[in-house]
Length: 145
Image 1 (cartoon, rainbow, N blue to C red):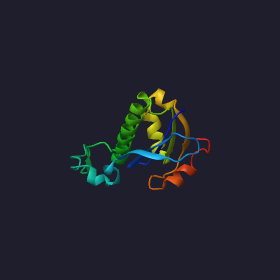
Image 2: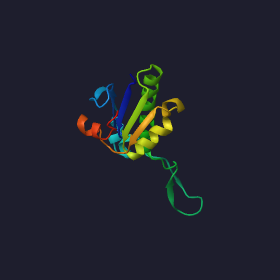
Image 3: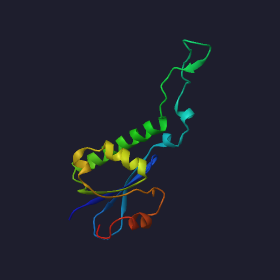
Image 4: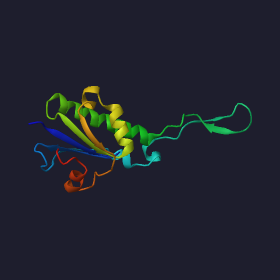
């Protein structure tokens, strides 16, 4: 019998479920947390960027390139999730993957996954259900799962 995993994720939490029986219940097998995803940008950066005078005039400006620390953190968390999925696939723990994730995390996940893991994706729902109960998550999945 084929095994399916269900990944429910947003930019700070990910939950992995296993579904072995058709139309059966989901069993949570793992949870990943990225607490820095809830921090503000100024809390993530330890120091202010350097400042310099303009070459022409009296103005001053920051020397560092503008970066989106939250987006970088989301991409790192997506890579961590993709690594966990890759290990599960290589160990033969699932052969079908269903993803329920907020839209930006779903894109980051797809970008971080290897081609063999991408090939296991059987369905996707772009919703944030990380704090929902198992019945609400199950309702987003195909009935024939």
